[in-house]
Length: 408
Image (cartoon, rainbow, N blue to C red; front, side):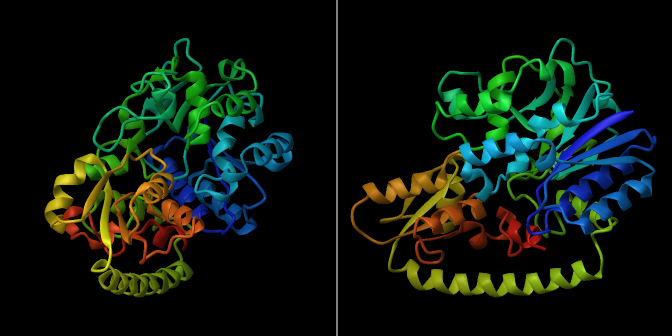
């Protein structure tokens, strides 16, 4: 039996389709009927969505079990809400921590398990991953790299806690249950440890790295192929891999192989029905109107404000040429793991008096947007999504916004 674990919180009822698509791709790629799929969830999972998961697993003859973390780990969730109240209102919900509890909550017969993030599409038979030797290590994972292929930059790396080449992404894990549990209560201890540093973003991932980055089995990158990095490098060829769609990389581009892979899988699931299609058409129309209005606002204010372009270092030359930077224009070099909202607010505070328009090029625009709005900034007046201004050949796209898909 191959044990596979997922975790989900779905307050709006719009996220189950991603996990459902991942589950469908997992089962379609693995013909043997020897999967036991474990879904860790909370009270936000609707009965309708649970039935769809059961329908998908039944279609392939695979075993499926549900675990309500609010019931089985109530004390841990209370601690999380007390110590990290901001996590419940961010893009990374408390469900991100459920993977830290999986080793304790799964049935006693489970000795090892694979964990997948919900935003993955499995384009390979996972039998190979399951058969990987963990040697003496408690878990196996893929080291994290940024879009340009450089080792991860992280507060723990900057503090000298670990080497950036060892920092791993927690979206795909192979876990030895006994060795993992031997580390003790890493949730509580990990949060206390991370609070010694400022700027950590991926709470669950950083806790896992704090404990295991200096001693884990390094997996081949094919087991956690980061779609934003592949798109950034213009790699448009599918190979057997687990594709990880983190950071809003999913759009509606017919010429993008990763978009097509996702929708090919999604279209076969119980989540793709006539109601979804009607919602999709309505959302596209609304998004089109929103983008047009935003473009009108930007055209109106750009001539009256200093333009501040915010993107990574690798994009600077292209943006300078595309937007003809000159005069009072400025380019702020930003890293993908940086607190963009905090950095922009700080820049605004120390800059001379004046009116500025910040043009942001980030796959996490929606998250940054909410943080800037909370700080009193106005979209279209003080900042905007720069991707909307790019031609398609530079990865710009009218319907690129991840919110378009996420909110359906």
